[in-house]
Image 1 (tube, rainbow, N blue to C red):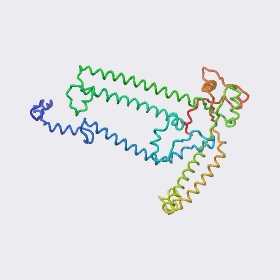
Image 2 (image 1 turned 45 degrees about the vertical axis):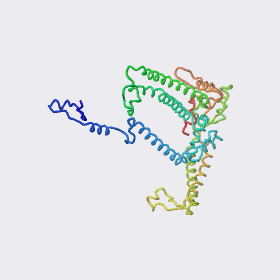
Image 3 (image 1 turned 180 degrees about the horizontal axis):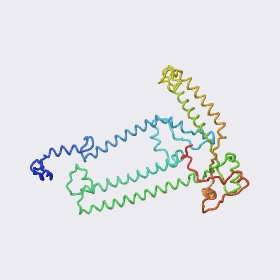
Image 4 (image 1 turned 180 degrees about the vertical axis):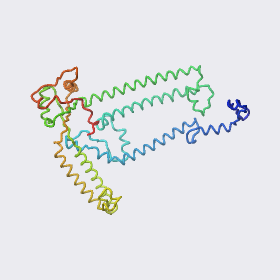
Amino acid sequence: MSTGNRVTIPNPIASLIGDKSPIITRDECSYYGRLNTTGFGLIRAYEGIPENIVVNLVVSAILLLLFVYLRRRFSDSKNIDDGTEISTLLYGQSNSSRNFAHNSRWIWIRDLFKISDWDVYRNCSPDAYYYLLFHTYLIAYLLFVTIFSLTIILPVNFQGTQGISEQKFAHTTIANLPADSPLLWFHAFASMLFVLAGIIVAYLYTNATRYYATEDMANRTLMIRGIRNSACDEEKLNEYFRESYPSFQITHLTLAYNIALLQHAYKRRELNLRIWQQSTQMFEESGKRPVVYNNKCGQLCGCCAKEVDAIDYYEKLYNAYKQRVEDEYLHVRGKKCGLAFVTFSTPEEAHRVRSNFRVTCFTPDRRPKTSTSKSLNVHEWNVNFAPSPKNIIW
């Protein structure tokens, strides 16, 4: 109940004790209403929706700039951990070189519009391609929903006659339409259309991933575990598969080695090389030779270390780890893991070999017997389809 500029709010508890209902003015209601709002109070129109959009855009811009900084700051560490050079030393030239990587700070924005799907699939991994493809279809679906809502549903809601103020967000929603309005059928039609569009987008995404999945070498590659070190030899394995499956063609046969020490020495070599180059650059710019402590705890305890020339110090470390990499490389081929990757010419051949080596309680042992099967101990082999090379932590 209201009288003039006052609003009477009935209080049932007060009525029970015989008290009168409190009287609150409209100004007080407006004051408490303003306290019960979210946002910064910069844009009051449409109940703060434009303000929310502006805040989201500002936060997105800040996150984008933070990503650019972190990408530039930690790109060197990522390059050190890549390990592509080790794979090249062991197995020859790699075909997965990241040919679209650049050192420029902003060149990656241009590359976003130039990199093809096949570049991402070949140079990153199938999972990276599927992830980006999913977001591409999701953005396309949301773009369709947004355009349809702004061009059709929003004008329909504006035709309502509920008397809601144009400054209220409810004026743009279905609440502005009367309960008996025939325009409500547009919302029912839009709901069914959005569901149908989502099904179509999911179908197109599934077809796109199925096409690239058939081209994956992992569908033709088997991972064999449990090979004895004495039998872990490319010639012996090739001979066994030639005798077992004379009509099958093996395109690649690769053995796995324990490269933990080699990888550690390689990372330390690259790290010291980078610091050595930076120290040399500092000397060229300032004319002063930089100094460092020759101990990790030198800054905390000066008596445990002494200052040395940074250029000479990191040059010695680089040469030491360089020699360690060369020495470890000479012995790494003797550190076999009992693991081999065998790639066949077709997925059907790989499925045939895997089914023969798959022994269960209901299937007999169908491993082919040859002149070398006993010496290779093929009954100890565990044969499965190999994961994608990009998904293996080497």
